[in-house]
View (spheres, rainbow, N blue to C red):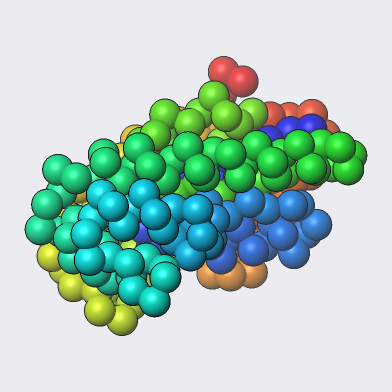
Length: 202
């Protein structure tokens, strides 16, 4: 079973691309969706203890948590120490389940794959990218997003140019949905044909 790691900076179209892989029959484990679920279940107690005032109606209020982190960015490692092991446990369950089911490909959608040094958890890395101007327009169109918030998020992410250098495959979502979908199909076909990288030295 080949484990694909899908990553890309904010606004690059990673979630849309992950859905395209799912549409082609590749099982997808979405780290963001797992975190959202953990904020309603296993992470509520420890996060609420570390960040007082973030638990509302029995779940983590993500807006309040974001507000506290914006005010105290030095507390990000505290949150990560709670959440990352829980995410990893869910990920391992996902991999075991699909390995036993005989899947030939699975995809781990991990936004901060490089930042958390998760390269060793996957066999190949697919980076989703696009022109920086398109990225900025997409992100600033989101509700509640500001240039200041975007700057804070980008400061915690490896630059796109560096991610592209580390990729086995690139998918440019700035060329339109159909071009991206066709590229997803090409990547899947390459992997099934035994080609695990498009790097010149691969």
